[in-house]
Image (tube, rainbow, N blue to C red; front, side, top):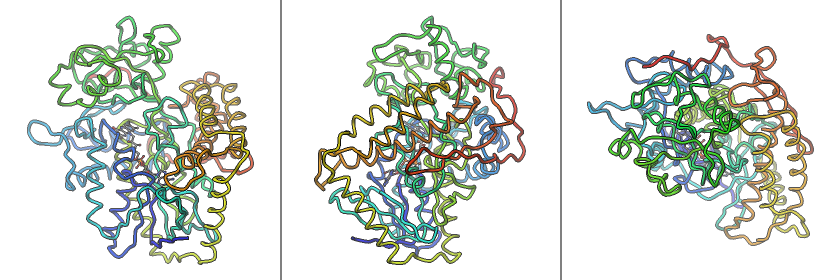
Length: 586
Ligand SMILES: Cc1cc2nc3c(=O)[nH]c(=O)nc-3n(C[C@H](O)[C@H](O)[C@H](O)COP(=O)(O)OP(=O)(O)OC[C@H]3O[C@@H](n4cnc5c(N)ncnc54)[C@H](O)[C@@H]3O)c2cc1C
């Protein structure tokens, strides 16, 4: 088997992976860094981010405000030491991007422009029109090209972590072009594999967001944390699930029901504010969990507009005028016209909540270290946790930068502490076993199940039972179904048994990752008998700090459903309080 030897190997070349690679290369030019990605780096999901990245920069803002918004927005499930570190590093990282060439939008006086974002009570979201992720990823990618020590392995799919003596030793990956398996030996591994929104059928997430990074760590014994917290973004296009960024509302767009009424005032996010004024704290700039839940409530009352893709509300941006829409929201205009046939300059755009982001992920500490020595994780696949029960829009792009770098520094510290390379025999045995499992899947005959069939059933189960509002009955049904799907997964048969760009094989492996993640979501949601942030139970409607001010940890069991454990939340200075989004104009 071909082998690549590196000091640090990174799985994932999106925002988090590239930031980690750059930090390693800068810290020590002699380090050998392998950057492995199942897609060309610029095709990572970070590229699709629209609205912007949060970091305190303006005189009327402060780190305390960013802390309070993040912790309150997360319904007090965030670890406050992690939030403190995050908000302090955030402006430095955004300025660093500027120096590497990121074209942040500007105020008329030349200073960096910021826009309001949901749940952020001050303006602190830096943006590059509504193509922020594209520009951030491009900036990181072109910067990474300066460093000869970063060796890229594009279109390599990581399949299993290798371990020796209770620490990570590397991983195996399939080279998609040849179908050959390659061994990556590394003293430290950083997973930056992105989210898992594709476990649901209606999502803003690109097709590659299948939770592979989470599953790699989970199967190697690292718990997944807070998986029940799945974020719905209120404004997806009903036809495709394509996102219309929160910046639409940050720039002044409003949401109305079928009666033309701005309904958020009825759900603790009022009072109604005048059109066209930049307004923080209230109405359309309520946090995503609350706005999505208000949609569901209005739908129950029959106040939504039926469309051929289900019920929708209307996002009205007409009062912003064509010039502002073209300057600040050009992509939103393009996408509304292309995917819905609606021009926001002349008509309101139908939108509905759509699965967007996983607050949960690989359990890491403040230093981005997992409990498995030598293994680190950062970005959407990780749960540090700064996002708690509900992420505020624009904190994620900054999180990639802050914790991508942090993971790199921690990996360096780990190497300097004398971490040894694993033995050849352990690596060879592990890699051969991984190749054997892959061959068995590829050559299997007589299997009764198909990838597409199981995937469809999984998505349907998640949508029906683990959506915006949940109940014991629905979640219990989902858990039974998902356990059954995992069992049936062992009987899938591939149509394509060839080696070159075998997408059938890759989709089968991705389905395996998704089933593991979906089961962790459903099991953690069933066990959490309270409502907090994005996890809302109709049968346990109140937040229960006495019993559930704790992180959930799902521990993998190959033959059974995961074991659920709990971990205390780190509270340093903000005691749990009431999340108040009513009143207060700025
Ligand atoms: C449409 C959209 C808009 C968004 N807008 C915003 C916004 O405005 N502001 C904000 O803060 N957040 C936003 N988000 C969220 C944010 O963009 C993501 O959370 C973030 O970009 C994830 O970055 P990442 O580096 O963790 O992962 P990604 O960018 O998803 O990259 C994952 C990487 O892992 C690799 N990978 C995965 N599995 C494997 C495997 N098995 N083997 C090898 N490689 C693998 C992939 O190839 C890829 O390179 C948005 C998200 C979406 C979907």
